[in-house]
Image 1: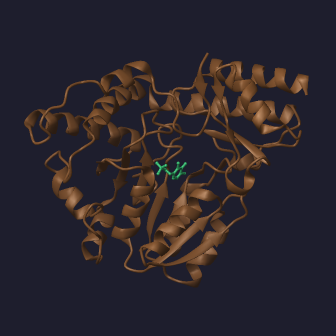
Image 2: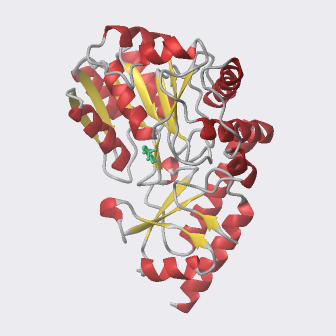
Length: 356
Ligand SMILES: *Cc1c(COP(=O)(O)O)cnc(C)c1O
């Protein structure tokens, strides 16, 4: 077996990889427009929105930047409880916004109470929240967080990074009133890296029209002008779009609810195995991610030895992120990973522990 258990890029199914070899066609053509409209229609189902989904040739970080540049003149509240929340904060600051942080310890979740406190203290134009902190394996309770924002500060736009969860965890963009939900291609959607997608609400797009210095590449009003004609302002990443179409068909054929249940079952399997083997997940029980487990290295495993042992068997897991390196390691269970992959991985892991 060869399998990637790192939190992106994850394995891509052979038929999806194969679709990338389809020939190029003119991107200003009825044929391409029809195709592109098709992928947006399928993406809307996955994002659980009826409004719009932008499809761009960039990575998820680019979409973080798009959200910031378009949706805030100035005041941003950045929720930070891991590396990717921190990145979005840095994106805000480096784009000249006045960003305040709502910090929680790495491994803890952002709570509705603390968010309510921050929003009561100062009016913010946008709040940025990472749904699934890929560094810590914490899932932030975005449904509850969004409810608090709408209650205390209804004008504040809700920006969600769902890079490592969308497609594997239920995110009801419209029902929960989320204004901007972004993801990358290479994580939970199980595509090659190189594209990002974002659902954008009507009121968010309205706001964008009034924001200065949106730039060009990430200008949502320009994106919208082209989207309604089923195209992009720049040359689209055509090969990836061929692959996207095949993968979205597979996702919808599995069924979203089945897909969510599969991710949850794999998470429970990995996390209960870790607990049973004396290596507690970093996240507390209520906030453990369904797509990536960050496991504390309580048995003092030498990560490079573990990694070589698994690589020799065709499997790849991740070390901890940043300061969590060697203190934790990460097992992703997302995309097309199935329970039998997890069983094989944990068996090999156990064999390694037995030899220690
Ligand atoms: C990987 C990741 C990103 C960065 O995405 P890129 O596609 O690498 O730019 C942002 N947020 C989260 C939660 C991630 O897991």
